[in-house]
Image (cartoon, rainbow, N blue to C red; front, side, top):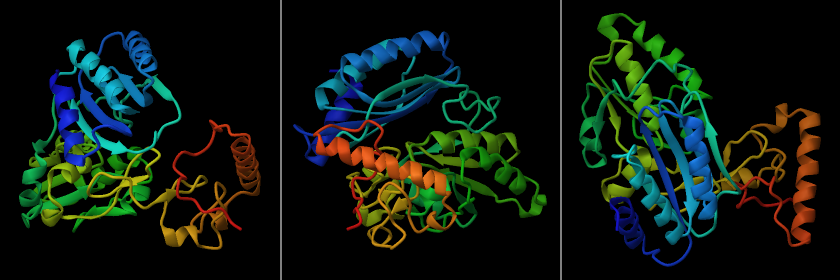
Amino acid sequence: MTVLVADMIRMLNRLKTKECGYVIATFYKFVHIDQVDLLCIQVQQVCDKNKILGTILLADEGINGTISAPRDAMASWLNWIEADGRFDNLSLKFSYSPAQPFLRMKVRPKREIVTMGYPEINPAKITGTYVDPINWNKVIADPDVLLIDTRNTYETAIGMFANAIDPMTKNFRDFPEWAQSLANQPPNQHPKKIAMYCTGGIRCEKASALMKDLGFAEVYHLKGGILKYLEDVPTSDSKWQGECFVFDGRVAVDHGLKPGSYAMCHACRMPLSAVDLDHPDFEDGISCSRCKPTLDLNRAARFAERQKQIRLAKERGEMHLGRNPRQKHAKPKV
């Protein structure tokens, strides 16, 4: 049994989901990769062979992905990537879903495995200081620490660490401008220490490399991100508030890493609570209260046609591959 498979089994035993459902693996590593296109083909073949679904991005700077499969298929993937040798010390988090949260398998070559728009920033060469989840509470309790959430507004809307700063970015490409504005403040107004976090660790690792490049000396980031924190830190000790947005059919997970309580708007991609689903402006697959006032009529018509095709496919007993897998909680209007 490989180390990665052993880690997966420990997680399943902890969640008491040993025999059924789907294991979800979220992983990344900043490492130089030669022949990215060839590796894309190899990874796609391994995933197809084992009926694994999800998304994996590959670039010169490394690997980043989230995939889902039954236990045995996931074990086959973990054995393969561990045997490859290039991905030792892979940042890897596991969670669980009773249903397959993805529709297809996509392996894509990219310029960056997490797009910040600054490919010259290389976390494999310089980055902030990792903080293990069990030590995170102590770090962020320091009054000299500025705690920064490096995620986007649709993610921060449903959960954050207490007292964290929200840069209010709509895309990770917006973060460098916000970071530069912080760096442009007079030196006596600079935070003495910075602590950063994100969903799985990859964005805050790259953001911490940027902050170091901008001249901030003491920069920390949460190893494994929120997902690892929610896995390792007991609820009774947690400083996390709300749920954690994830990029698959679960929409969000709670402190037990189980599917949370949110759905998603197909039009604007914002997470929707039960209250949002009952709002008059919510139309399944078409709009919600946040986007209805500005929704283009042509887009609304396309969404309506799409929902019609989804309904017809369901009546035929088929799955519409174009459906939004994050709408499992959506309540159609009567």
